[in-house]
Amino acid sequence: MTDARILTEALRDPATVARLDPEGWTALLAIARAEQLIGTLSHRLDGLPMPGAAARILSDARASAEQGRIAALWEAEMARRALAPLGIDVILLKGTAYAAAGFAASAGRSIGDLDILVPRAQLDAAEAALLATGWEWVKPDPYDDLYYRRWMHELPPLIHRDRDRMIDVHHTILPLTARITPDADALIADSVALGNGLRILASADRICHAAAHLIADGDLAGGLRNLWDIHCLVEECGTAGLAERAALHGLTAAVERALRLAGRLYGTGNHASGAAGKDQWYLRRLLARDGWGRPARKFTRLGFYVRSHWLRMPPVLLAQHLFKKWRKDQN
Image (tube, rainbow, N blue to C red; front, side, top):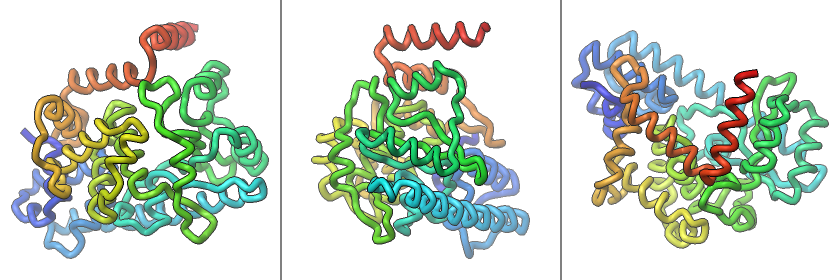
């Protein structure tokens, strides 16, 4: 039975595509597109022999990713210009950070919203400055707005009225209601200047953040892309100081699991050994695609969806939140 392992094997060892038949190529491209890794795949397979139709699809994906990279960097510059008069540094997160720094993880990477980190004490000023320079609220509902401001690790998302680009302004990297409380002050204090007025997290903190996003938050949707980020960050920048920073942020278990999973699927370092027990369920969820790129393994996905909510909120608060959402949907 086909699952997303056909994609992880192609990313890990591009030569494996030589044995694909037409059905295999269809599955590879469909799954790569569904996992938002088709641009990354196009870079990994560049120069290898392949069917003409596949070559054209991957060429288009590479061009689209490059356009996305340019747009993401421009949006980062716009945020910098909005916040610079206030003396607020823009610390880039995720894909835009990798692109701005020229990391290997950015090659062909799909980049969605602009994610930035600012000190919580400057959150109101940052929001006011962004609103004054063309961004607008996306969440008009009062309860959704309250949900973000009281419990989440970021402001309600904003979108620019002219450029139609979203920005997520974080003040830490996990919800305030989560069981883990990373040290946001340390993330900011140890961030690294890029020389163009923008900053990124320090090397070990980048991996901690990626692991937190993958393992300690969410339901693993898009997990293969996050895991590829971790693989590239480890291979390019190493893991010096990672154990200490993971302990500081309360993310030791998440980081260790992310490294084991990356080792199993992408051959990251020497982290493949030791994956066992619950890791098998994470692998089953990460690879849950059929040969057409459609979601598979319904009950495994449901289990991780429930888990994501369990991690995000204490039970009583979660029950209250779900009840209010249910009542709103009934009206």
